Image 1 (cartoon, rainbow, N blue to C red):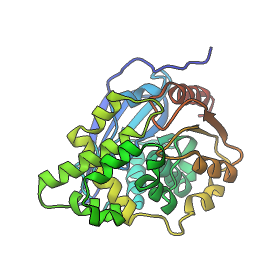
Image 2 (cartoon, one colour):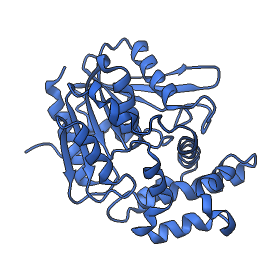
Image 3 (tube, one colour):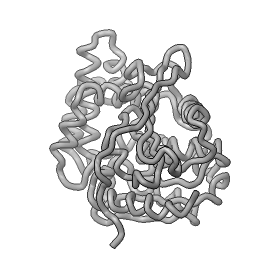
Image 4 (cartoon, rainbow, N blue to C red):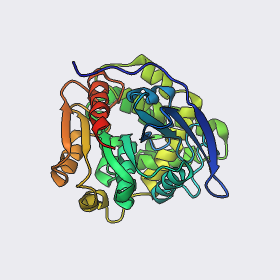
Amino acid sequence: MPRSDFYPPIDPFQTGTIAVDGIHTVYWEQAGNPRGVPVMFLHGGPGAGASPTHRRFFDPAHYRIIVMDQRGAGRSTPLGETRENTTERLVEDVETLRRHLGIERWHLFGGSWGSTLALAYAETHPDRCLGLILRGIFLMRKSEIDWFLYSMRVLFPEAWAAFTAHIPEDERGDLLEAYWKRLDSPDPMVRMAAARVWSIYEGSCSSLLPSPDLIAASGEDRHALGLARIEAHYFRSNRFTPEDRLLRDVHRIRHLPAVIVQGRYDVVCPVVSADELHRAWPEADYRIVPDAGHSAMEPGIRAALIQATERFKEYR
């Protein structure tokens, strides 16, 4: 039977940081087989950071597992910093880490915002990629951002009501700017309160069935602050020009093996974006999980991703 559950927990065999500019220091780690096939895990958000569970998608006997907390996220510093924090800078950081670790080519594994960054990196550096495993496709378009801010209420009205209740009624016409005003407040209590509500809103909508553990993790201070500040910053200031750039430039990577895993009932990143990506990249193996939402931890999504990493053992 194809493997469908996580590999056992493992610790990194190496950790480090890189000062990527005068503001940001980026955390990275390696786990698994030091001589294995390199795979780069790209976390979501933007701003969510990585966790020890993310190492467990990969066979540690086969893969050299590289994990990086992106600028402003997780163990990278300063937490929640938006200055010099753009998609282009993140692509540069990934490439800086590749060179730092002496890796010639690697697989990319990214979900949600991680799929966005994986596509942006691969389209910029196709010669450095062995293949892509993508989940919960997000292409950083206005329609997707507006869906997150306003239209998720169609399916999660209670979560959206709590999200909007944090903002005075006269500011709800532009929820993004209203939240940003609070997330960028000089008062740390104002920042943290807004961040927690934003992050819990996203966590509450991220699984097909209610997940108290996911919602609790979403409200944790460091996770919430990094996610909410960086996500709102990117939604405001880091859209692609032209907006369909990732789809337009797929021709640069169509020769690479790829798997696209998408939950049929993903509300945070609806299936329409994955469908458009697959139409632009018909060679990619497109797997719709019929009983899943957005979270990579849901059983069907998890199984499809692990089966993809097993299949990718043939690509070196």
